[in-house]
Length: 112
Length: 142
Image (cartoon, chains in turn red, purple):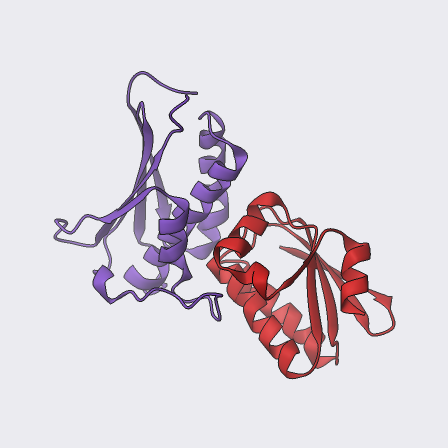
């Protein structure tokens, strides 16, 4: 799992993921996302364009992140989800509580 | 592609999380040969991945070096996947359905298997370990 981050606008961190999100890669991602929160990041946009696979371990990582940001008044938007990854969010009924954007532009407008 | 005869392929993986990704690539390549939509193929990968992860986490308690066997049987009307481990027995009656929308990852694995496959059964006749049998029927038009 490769993780690239950049600051898009003041206070908004954009995270680009590359690889599969499974029981093996999820702990590393959880640690990295935890570091962003420790730096005070409150608004995160996560690009899923290069994530082809996510399982329940990967979903759990984002459920935890979502809950932490919600408690601290932050925001989380996921964008560019592939059909397969979106389907996993939908089956877990998470599309009803997560902000899922089509592209980065929409994600930035939702997180602002 | 649809086959007129049944064929069987066996994958062997060890109970280490890092084995999941290379194993998935092999299974993905195998499924490319079946006349299935991409969405169905990806769902099968998630369901089988969850079954293997459960074997690593729950049957083998994340201890490495144990064997997981996946048998893929391509039949005329369906694909049958058997995930076999030799670890601690799992009692399927004790698995609770997850709260939805999901508020945690736990419990989602078996739910995904049931949602993404057409049939999920535990072979309770195995004296040692577990065998999960997951079936996906081919669309009738094929």
